Length: 481
Ligand code: 2HG
Ligand code: ZN
Image (cartoon, rainbow, N blue to C red; front, side, top):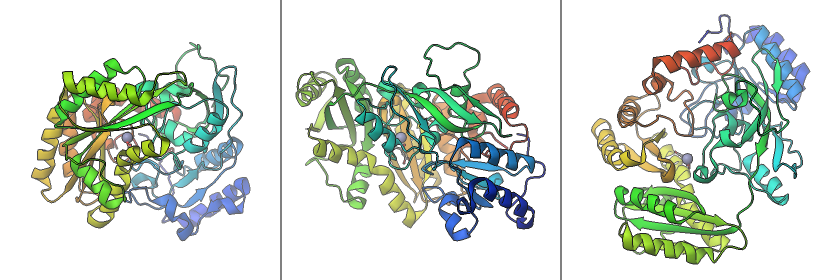
């Protein structure tokens, strides 16, 4: 990366004064936050593991203001850390490391949700619209959005595009890259590019929206996006199925996919994680027996479909008689009962954070493995963590149908990366990916080369340099030093 040669730092406040004055003129005094107490929540990530210091937090209300802000920062080479709902888990949206002293560019005020375009089934939204607000808006208009995730109330569409978020329904609809039809984005020097016309077929050169998606704020700042919507599937059923081991879970998922075309989610968690959730999040254990592994399934069908609860129960019985031993199963169709089952899975993140506040902030290693290697990975990762950090707690859960496991390690100090290194090396050895859906951020950039190899890495660096030659956008994120 081209290092910002004359980047200002937090320790040079006098040099910042003219820039701060200019930013105040752009967005108004109230939207340039310099008071350390007011800045604090923008300077630490959701897990508490990544904590830094910004020169100021700037909160524009329009793309025009983003253009002006970037122009101003670019002229004096001050780094900019774009931030949405600050729900990221890899330190990619907070001013840490090379980001210390940066301007945090909070995009939360770009929260305009335009009316749904009924003829195309698409919508244009501001980067600061939360996923929950998008879901409410499009559902009221008779549509749904293909990506869903636990942090829906705070996560913003801009942040989800920047990280190419995957979530709970990737199995059916794909991740963010598959929903983004076009973006409006501002380059590091303040130039803007936009393609929001909603053309589904558009082979006019490089897919710049696709490139910006997943670029973690290092190529451009997304200010608006044109999104594909999906037809709602209101006939839903959720099951949690207890199984003996991970190999059975992987086999069961393959079986369910073959017989349940309406399968929308297939998640996994383990007995120790479930116990932690029940202790920390006042949820109750849904089973009398103790299985080792739990698979959560959701089916979603159109209004005229046969009874979804019965269809799902029959599928579980069929897999139980022909593929694997089912230890226990519970099926729900009523919304409250479905949410209660989902809570067992979704509350893992919250439960891990609560424990982390006591025994050490979690190291979050969100990885993907080929389906066939998952049982071996689960067995070996427990050994790897235990051999390096015998007192650490390991909590595993994830999106099994996507091969995506969330490896949470609690205990090692925030900057002790020995366990991270061993786990990520194991992932690469088993032909997996070191980041499934959270991105690389600051947490994993050291290992990007190990995963992608030198040619891909050099190509990424060249792309980065083409978009942002001075390297002011999110320095220290994604690409290794
Ligand atoms: C989830 O799937 C999120 O719940 C968070 O991706 C994962 O907390 C985590 O490790
Ligand atoms: Zn996840």
